[in-house]
Structures are given as C-alpha cells and as structure tokens.
Image (tube, rainbow, N blue to C red; front, side, top):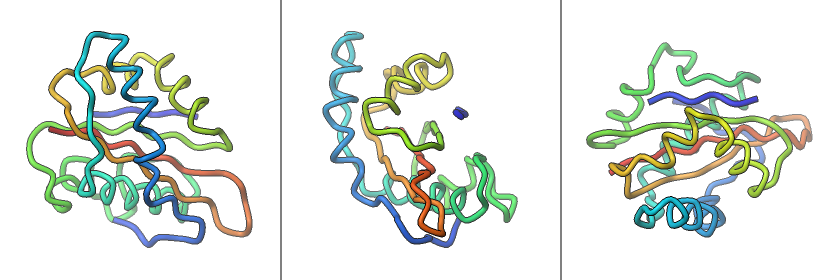
Amino acid sequence: MLAACQTAKIVPGQGAGASASADAYLADIRKSNGLTRMTADTTLEKAALQQAGYMASAGRMSHTTGWGKDFASRMRNNGVQGAAAENIAQGQMDMAKLFSMWMNSPGHRRNMLDPRFSKYGLAYVREGNGSDRKYWALVLGR
C-alpha cells in the first residue's frame, strides 16, 4: 500500500537512522533525472519517525494523526520550514522495493523529483506483536 501528499508514540521496532540507508537510492534517482543530490536531515527524520510511529501504533497508513494533526501542522510542530512533502508506505519490503514502488507511483515520484527539495528524512516503525510489517515515512524538504 502507498500514499502520497504534499505526533505519535514510538512502538517497538523503530527504524530511526534509516535515512543513511536511503542515501544511495535517492542519489541515483535524482542524478538519473538531472537533479542535485539530497542530504539526510535529522529534523526531517524526526518528523518521519513520528509519523511512522503513529501509523504503526494505529495499524493504518495516514498523513493525519489520531489527534487530527494534518501534514502541515506536523511539519510546523517539528520545526520544518517552507515547502515539504511526505511519502508513506507499509509492508515487508526492503529499501530497493520501497523506492521502486514510490518511483512507479506518480505522486510519490513527483515528490522525490521535486527540484525544490534538497533534504530528506526516512524512518520506519514495525507493527507491534513481533510483526515484520513496517510503516515507512519519507519527509522531503528544503
């Protein structure tokens, strides 16, 4: 499942630090489309981890939290300035499959290829109860 659009309790299995693993994928995607490389950003990763945690605890994908906070509110509350976008996904995929799915989805592709964005944060949180299902969030910004 995928969703794209232009805060939560963290549950077991959090994937903080996933941004470093995404660097090569995003660099290749951007370079092959004539765009500059993006850099990992801790503020954006924190925002991504927060949303991944919310989705995992709720057991569903959403760009809005259970407290009714929309994407723009979450970005402001996390100190993200200016334009931003978010890609989310859930499943048992590895990084290659995740980015392949996003590149084959028009909304996700548009977010990753937006020339306004120079930074990103990626995180995932596993569902509880020993599940291998991950809830992913990629936040892109300036």
